[in-house]
Image 1: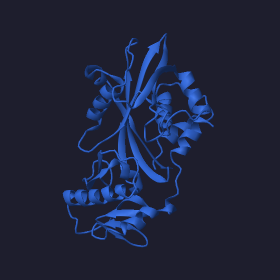
Image 2 (image 1 turned 90 degrees about the vertical axis):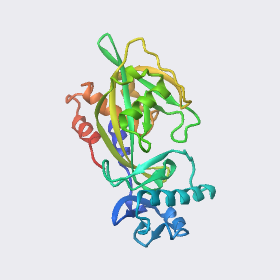
Image 3 (image 1 turned 45 degrees about the horizontal axis):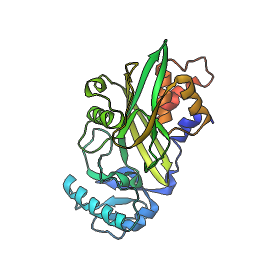
Image 4 (image 1 turned 90 degrees about the horizontal axis):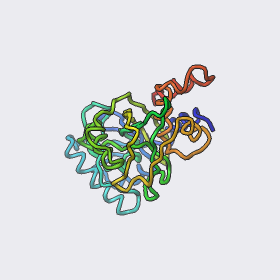
Length: 283
């Protein structure tokens, strides 16, 4: 295993396993073929063809599409087809900033392979000129990657919430970061990946923030999503990324970007160009 393996794993997928998902003649995702078979039961909502799945044309507004698709999702949940229901809506569009097309239950997002967004915070301190990174260990009951190491603060972007506002909210819930401290976080870019995970296609973009924390800050979790926190030197963070599978699948991508921006990883490494270009790779 290597740092580059972490990046490559976030871009591993086979689109031949999916059918294009279309709204108003524009492809916005990739539908699992077994889901397409299930959607044939709902012809008033989904038009299933041999080579694509489309939302029915008569659903011609955001509200109509949202209500109709939500009804289908709830029935599929009752049938046991959708696991890990979150009661959290994500707004779906062709790309970031485009016209919203409908809201979708979060658990259904990877089934349709549509674009989703989230925020991750690199929370760090300086000790004797060295950078140490706060990381959390995900609770055992998390639906995705339980027990894995994660960022100090991270979360999906729900409907109607702006990224920075979501970061402030998640910071309070996940790490007890006071609002006035969390507001010092600085946006540092966006990282995208498309990968298969648990039989679904994730097409995600992470908005990345950095925050230098006071040396005496100690995070405390409030929402039950994080089991514990630990403060690690970058050398140990790099080792864990390169030698173990301890980190959640997408966290490595963000941390490698952080290591490059903090000049911890330098062009003296033979794999520097691969890493630097890899983290900014487009799906």
